[in-house]
Image 1 (cartoon, rainbow, N blue to C red):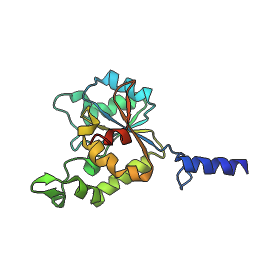
Image 2 (image 1 turned 60 degrees about the horizontal axis):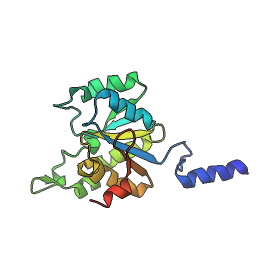
Image 3 (image 1 turned 135 degrees about the vertical axis):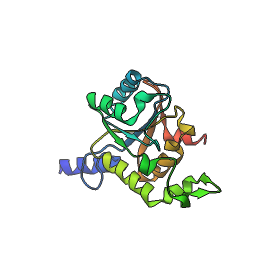
Length: 180
């Protein structure tokens, strides 16, 4: 009986979803622009991140080539952190022309796009196994699509979203969105 009560408490708290698999309801985001690889790793380790989901539309950096997909994957894997590129699903520049109005991407339309929704499902499914940080380039989460697009479409799923500023700074999504 005690184990059933504990299981129900864990389900209500979001640690266990209906599937019965262990999972936290926490999701993190991070912008790599203020970091070198060592400080990036230090922040990920501090927050116990076990997987980075790259939501850049293109997994390459003109200014920080060490954050290009291949180099970053190898570096993270060497330190026990998984990497997955989800920019095809959750990037700010989508291929579907129906998501554009007057030549500009419309995040409301992107949020309704089946491919984007599949990307959100992949993130949620990944949370069953990993403690995930969504990664993009921008330091300021308020100006990045990871907040404006991706996280906005995850909040109704009961996920507690936190933006990593540095080793000491962590902003909750609900507080950040009050300023948007």
